[in-house]
Image 1 (cartoon, rainbow, N blue to C red):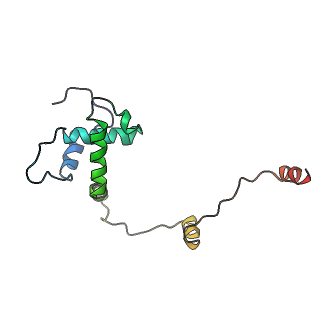
Image 2 (cartoon, rainbow, N blue to C red):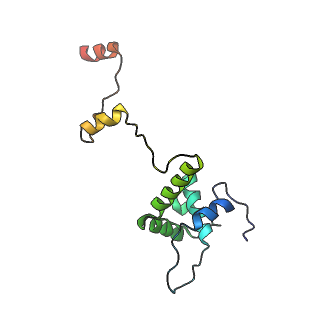
Image 3 (tube, one colour):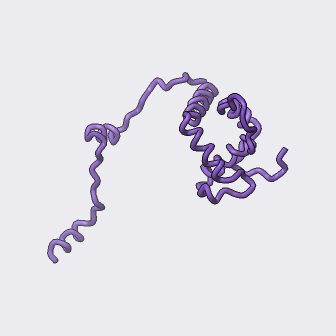
Length: 138
């Protein structure tokens, strides 16, 4: 058991129990992982929640290169999307809602953007009429 003080971004025991079953399992034989999986996730959450650079990861976490490599691996193999999907389903279930939303809301800005095939016209900041008159007369 780790006796160091936890960061606010660290997983609680309950959160860890939910997440650990969603993480990829080690297959076959091979080297035993050098770093604790929970500490790897705590390090990833620290970077994500604090916005610090990977290289600025505090020294009590595994090396930043290892943490970043694991973060990328989970992104490439679809684990982050799968975790997000399961958490969303769990939250909707807790709230007594259906797994999938039954209503979609599209605001007018989204419609205008779609009509322009994804391009959005940008307009410059408009000044007062007096400022425009001054610039025209110069």
